[in-house]
Image: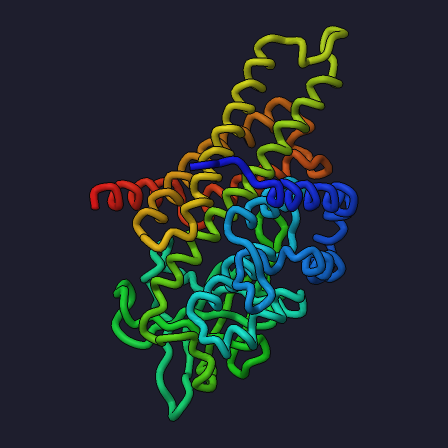
Length: 378
């Protein structure tokens, strides 16, 4: 198996890093977080012009490439601490629509997403679901030729920014059953839909979704309204890989910024980088970053594997390993910066926040260890 990025993937990665280094400084990001939306529509349009919003989506609807291409851009986004909802819209919601939607639904929904004209997000998690995708209690019942949705969703990424939500709701059975889960497109302005917005630990926007007898047309259901779990599992695996790439970008940035700090900060009239014990710690950080890169590439190559068990094993292995490395690199970065590493004004603390959230997002270490063990036994 060749883990070397293709020339096209290298060009995609380099172009993303070049644009973000020039246009997405830490100070500019700080100003974005202080706005009402917490993102830049101008940057979002540029992402669309570069083709980033169509990565991994079907070519028939304006997309191109696959997960090995997605991770090139996701890594650059993590390195720049980008707060625009790329992962929520393109990877999570986009992959669910592409996986479950009919040709007509995809033709109506995906081109606006790819063009940057619409932001979608997936509303799946509930208060009691933790990381179990089958735990869906929100209900969807038939009413004439349409549907009525009721329930509550928590931790919805980009909720206050979304033009439409892809909502997981149960059409049959009880919470925990693998069958009976449907996927429904709910416009942001639908009657009975409420959004409670908030800023996450890393500053990005999220929210709670309240569905109070939201009436939808029959065409709002994506595919089979009782068989959405397989699509959810595939989309979450792909989003986990993209999140790992984002974390790798953040870890790489922490490594280089820490190296630069140690080379310029002096103690006893000599740079901190001259102390052997700190050199060893930097070497361990470098090893953690490179080990994460290898695990990420392997998971990305398995992300589109039609054998779900093989895909899931690779994704869980990567999530566990990269989470452990991210924790180590983030802590070392803050410690080696000393007291200044804890200040709001320095970017290193914001990388720490992003990597901390990554460790718990899309399933923590315990969840993925259990899943990997169960799949290995199978």
